[in-house]
Amino acid sequence: MIRDLTFSVGEYRRRLLLVQELIAARRLDCVILDEPEMMAWLSGYTVSENLWRACVVPASGEPFLLVRKLDTPPAQQRSWMEDIVGFRDWDDPLVTLVDALRDRKIAHKHIGVEFQSNSFTVQRHNRLRALLPGSDVRDLERSAWSLRGCKSAEEIAHMRRAGTLLDSAFQATVREVGSGKSQREVAAAAASAYYKLGFDDGFVGPLNVGSGWDSLHGFLEERPLVDGDIVHIELLPRLRFYTVRIMRSVIVGRATDEQRAAAETLISLQDQQIAALRPGALAADVDRIVREGVVAAGLRDTYDNITGYTLGVAPLVSQHTSDLYRCFTPRSDWMVEEGMVFHMYTSAAGLAMSDSVVVTKTGGERLTKTPRQIFETDAR
Image (cartoon, rainbow, N blue to C red; front, side, top):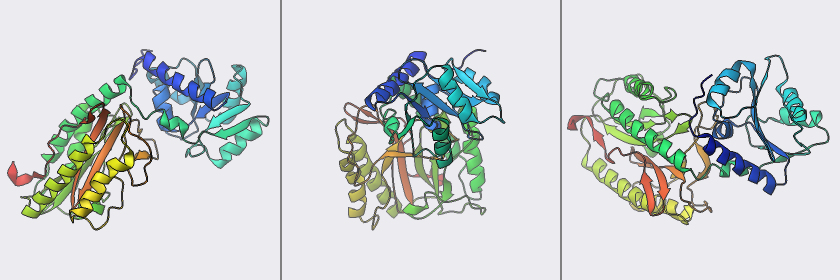
């Protein structure tokens, strides 16, 4: 079988080393990673949890991937890992895992697991402890997620390419907006563009008509679009598990003077925020630029949501639509670092603006290059 890897083997081994350094720092013998984000990041492959699956990393030596035998061929194609353990659909995967640990003579007195994982249920935790009564199962406390925060040169190049493709998908989507069109026709144009451009799937993202800042997560309506509608387009495609994102507003017809003024304010504030994304900046200070600026401008009475969050690995099979482990709020006490990538977004007066942004030495750089403006169907 010919392998089809997203990144070089050297890149994946760099990630393995980071995990093993974490294992040493937390004085563990091995870790079990069963969240789809961590599995995809480390192994290059993940799959839905019809049956439990995981990636196991020892303190030293080679990791192994545990999946259904049905899933071993695609795992062998997309993962750099040589050791892939398959189990039959009627087998207990935890028993298979314990047998694999013993067969490989992997020490397991102290095992690290992410207790916040949606896959590592209380039942599985208890079952693992019963199978390994002499082992201590410890919480990783999200420490493994921090390893994914700063992107490598290969990751940034990959996400930069995804940003370019996303700009093309947005253009195809906005061309479909018009009076008399259905919202489903607009969504269909986005999904079609995803597949044609090479994205993983056709999951579009929030696309709806709204008038307030809190309409971003609305639903498709069945009625046709009419003049004056504000079509909110948020595209969330995935390229080999990695997501880039963009939000823009499209006015059916022409924008009002008030809408133009509001858009100019939002764009100006967010431009300042993106420029402030420098290594060493306090996340709460970056957040404040947009949060307080929008309220001070009278565009919102309160600003109750975040102003940005981490981008990177986001498989469709994850329960997390967005990675909020590192996000921008008034209480964010972490520092911005070079190589971090964020979805920076803001909204008010029914309008929304966002871009995918990578942190460089001199500030934020947009990976999505679509013009930062209101789009109008009568301005074509």
